[in-house]
Length: 446
Image (cartoon, rainbow, N blue to C red; front, side, top):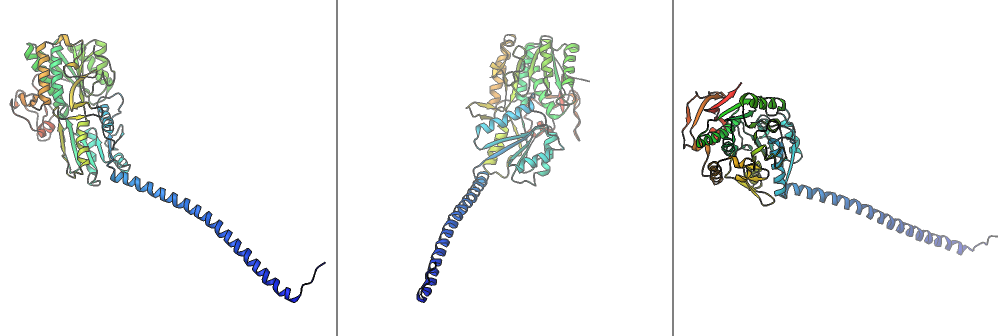
């Protein structure tokens, strides 16, 4: 069956076989190399591409954080946002700035107390926050403790009476008393019983100063119209105590016959009482009709609206410019303004109601009840304050009522003492930290 091969053939076969084996081996190796190379190239290419993409993404992300000018504004709100005028106004400010600037982001935390202000701030910074704000003094002051630890971050805290600052720890407050003066003129003209009530939080320089702005407006209206007007203030004990605020408002109406009521607290309870009792309400911090739809202009005679974005914008502009030594006390009034994303220019504070400003902000139902001379004065003083030409605390003498808040080394001046003469401009420092007395003519209820 088998053919035998000659010796020569025997010798050739191994060589042929060897050549064939070598050829097969070469082909196999080529195939393996080619196949392995393709798979390897493919895998390597995939890996390389993924690595490159990841690296590029990471690099671009780092570059975005480092080079594209993105600034993150973080606000720590001491209260809830919904249903409050104070934190609501701060929240709106953050939103408006994010709308105005493509490179500004706004983040926040609610219900932040002093015990968690620092850990929350550090968490926000770890997530990219460049500017961190405590929107009340009692929980904003702890941020000073970490200002040196984060030298590239701006910190901010609202001023109640303390004026502590550091290079990157900024204190701020708007001159709300200017708009409150205009509200006082309107309230003084509207009262028919001659009794105006204020539901207030607790004595502090911030609260006293704002109340005094309102009081001066009421007293100017009373003098112009020949009225005798009583102003009653009763403290609830804190900023947001709806039941207590309601009780005070009801007492002011039932026992003191007030027909105009306002507040230096944050809940809607005093407004609810005004609606129920059919009396005029004067709002604070925000246009509560136009922005929140709380009640209507049949109850709300006027509000004042605070644009915290003017102050925060100042901080953002300084941060954008790389200023390592920004202004550390910001106390801006109606002379300062911001142009919003929609092109609207708004001053730091203004009287506002149902989306309208200035004289137009006065309730259509209230307008016919206000004498023209008061309307003219409201319009005149508002224009002067926007132009930076007039201020109620400069124009008026400031005479102590003998009540207020005793501070360390600064007792409440005696009743009848003229602390500042008319025509003399008080310093920002004095207004922010030493204006600790009620103005003569106010009744503080126990």
